[in-house]
Length: 199
Image 1: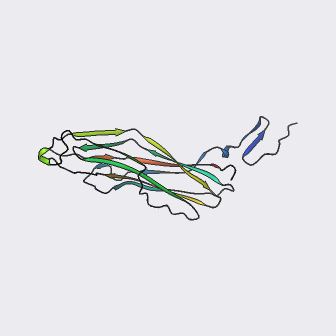
Image 2: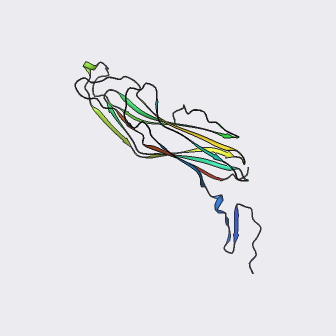
C-alpha cells in the first residue's frame, strides 16, 4: 500500500516521490503579436515615427501571487542609409500593475539599432559630399523585462513601441535617386508567470 504525504498545492506527491506541480514552473499566460505599419521607404523624421505600437494585458485570476517576466522578441531588422544621413529604429516599453492599471506611453529608449555612413569630411553641404549607401541588418533579438509580483485580482498592462527616426543632418543628392528605408517587421510579447515564493 502506498500513502501520499501532505504537500502544498504547488507540489506533487506520487508513487515516484515528491516533485513540483506543473503550474509551479514558468508558463505563458498572455501573448501579443505586433506587426509594423511603416516598413519601407521613409522621409525625414526628426522626431520618432511609430512603426509598431501595442499592448499586452493579463489578469491574475489565481489564488496566488504570480511573479511575471515579459519576453520582448524582435524580428531581424534592416535599414538603408544614404550618406550622410542617419536612420535608427528605437525600442521602448513601459508597464503598470494593480487594479485597472494604465501604463505610461513608452518614451525612454531601451534599445536602438541603425546606421550612419559618411565617406568624406564632416561637411553637410550638398556640393561637398560624396554619396554612398549603407545596408545594415541585425539578427532577431530578445529582452527579458522583470515586471515583479502580481497579486490575486490585480492586472498587468504592458505597452511596447518601436519608432523610426532620422536624427542629425538630412541632405539629398541631386544627381541620383536617394534611398532611405527601415524594416522593423514584427515584435512578439510573451508574459511568463510562476507562483511567487515566500510572498
